Image (cartoon, rainbow, N blue to C red; front, side, top):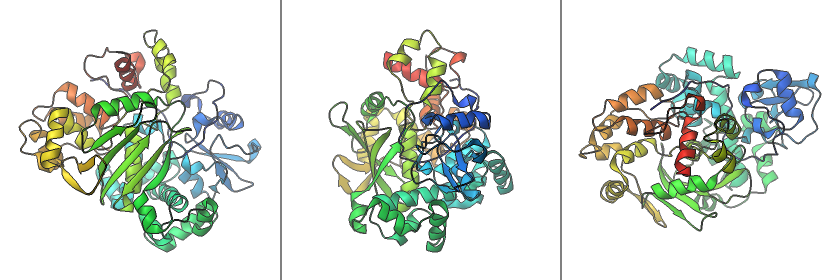
Length: 477
């Protein structure tokens, strides 16, 4: 297994976007000064939505680079690395471009440092569940160190970053469901209704009721919850959905996952074990825009942020296909494949521990164990009837038992903020986990974009996107 460095500055977000055609040949690495960023704003270059945000001092509004509004004068523009930083300086979100709804950052998938790991965990809702001390403890740093590093690089600390994420979750629920405002406040992670109201006014310059009226959502709360939360999961640039759905269909374990429908219009559905309850998610292959249409059914709405984050990782929606194509397309051996199939992704997984166990078990034994040890859903949904067994339920298995015990007791950590090198070393120390399995788990369960598992050729020139090269090689074969 081989992996790469951790370059790139970053961004963050959850879902929904509209993307105009990119202009010129700028890449993420070019966004090193404000004048270059202003060029991207002037050309409304959607490739950089989420890479940075710009704010207009004369209006008090911040936007994504592709905002369709008239380009402001350079002297009136300030730039911020995150939406939270813009909000912290008193700017409110643009009503036209919805800068809180941009794709997430490829940088956080590439980077293995404390900032990258922290951003992945904040996206997964760790601050909402465990507070900043919990985040710092998982990272192995003090709360002061985490605060200092995030603020220095991103212009906002963990509380502000989590607050921006909560505001976006709340807007989604207000505008896509008819749930009572009080339920939405706590589902989005706010500690009180007062805090929720103050945040919504500060970020969107409107009351929660006004936000809801804009979208005209009005179904009854309980009915809306039963129907699930509809989402548009944004991605950047071309997206090779066919290849992703082919892989998911080939790997699907009955009762836990299924892919239904004709090719080109398939729907992927699976069950999720979440911090507060369970969920069923569905994602459509043939979505009409720069997003994947999804619907999330939850037994506990507080799990919404975590469920969305897991779907984004599973479908690799925060990738930078332009950077991948630039690097891999320069290789004569891959150039034709990159040109013929733009937007190939390196899928992750929605359940890292489940994926690790399934890697050792294989599909047939995984399916048998779902029948024998899976947790039945309270209400079955089509062919989805169970959750995959938890590691604690498989500690006695002759093949997966050692890994299940290591996952259950924390000797192996595969959460979004896990240190990938440490996780790999811990995996290789588990009886029955070989280098190829460890590499595959690192690629998929930990979302490392720079791993070449198995017999793939060594190629330094593919760094830091060797996981994508592996996908091109696999689909070509």
